[in-house]
Length: 305
Image (tube, rainbow, N blue to C red; front, side):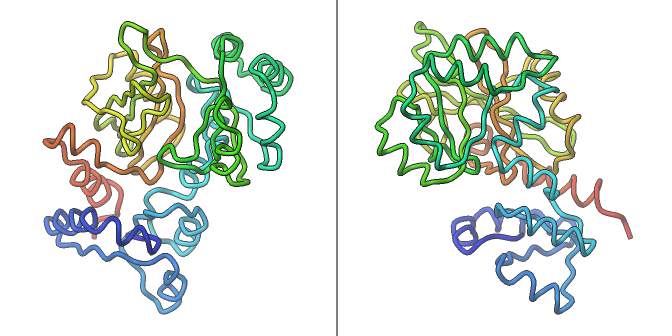
């Protein structure tokens, strides 16, 4: 399991979970610092497989180039750790949040514009997909507010409404490339919810579980920011939506995030390559995604000797 220095300390309990469950397969788990990886490979240390738990697509690529099975793959890491690339990649397969990508230096100009001007910006620059064009137009043209997100942000910490204090937004994005998206209304006033989204945990080509995240005080529903979570049962239509994503890319384990709009549609928002499972274990402790992930890797994906 490959981590950066901070991650290896923060995830000690998670690493221990993998160690315990690997005993079933008479396999050992070793946490490895990403910075030491090139030297270890040069010294001939070749693991059975590698679980990359830090965000650095170059690491996934380096491992694949020397023939080590990697979870997740370089393709998943490269596409899914960039919000703009993710939505561009999947937009013809599933209704996705319309998104434009900009360099960090363009943020002050974006923040100076009113929602109506940003709608015109989308009309001029957004390339509509043939399958979902009218839905995309509706999401853009009905927006009364817009959101900016750092392209590689995680946990909702670099996500802002354009109506927030400009100094706060500029400091939060910190000069990074960012995406601009229409804010999608989620829930009704009767439900008293400002934000609802669904995290679907997948292992391989299978849907493992889904969790509903909601917030009554913030348009960001992230669990790490105080959002409420509960187990969520997908309808048959929603299952088809998720499978449209699974048909487009080979995942090991990932968290696919959808916004639930006022019409109860699942709209693809982003995909977590290095997905945490803390909220899943909290609201569904009977489900052991670590055990299922290891079963998938060691029984389905790795060659048997």
